[in-house]
Length: 200
Image 1 (cartoon, one colour):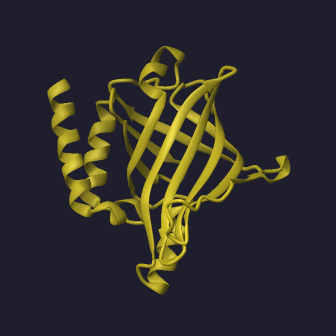
Image 2 (spheres, rainbow, N blue to C red; image 1 turned 135 degrees about the horizontal axis):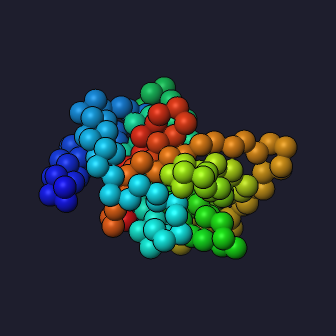
């Protein structure tokens, strides 16, 4: 089982690498990659990833390497890129998972580069509320923020971070399934079936 697991992970990483970073993070679904993901999900070594006893594997900083239908951040970028060309580049997307007051806190960040305007970091912080199956979580975002980290392309020009709290009546809940988890890879599924592959 462990060898099969490792072989599938190696194949998955190879296929994602072949796509290239921009294509793998923007709205693009690759049938072969999605099939490998389904095979990994069937042999998921940690079936209750949201159980506190599994937090050593779950928590930490995770790099997003594949999103079958993009993300909240990259979908608009993909649409703009289709219209305006390659003026916007996604440099990195990552997620930090921590526990605070017995709640799982998810801090999602993206670093994007805009031609002539520099680099910007976008963040969305939310809470995962585990369901009884300890596989699915209800996700609620409570804060969005943005910061120019290299304004106008100048490394020394960093502007203050702007945080925007989300009012209670505007908060929407979404379901998130952690369908695969081991020591260095995590796969998540959104409510509509979007697939996300993370590496620690």
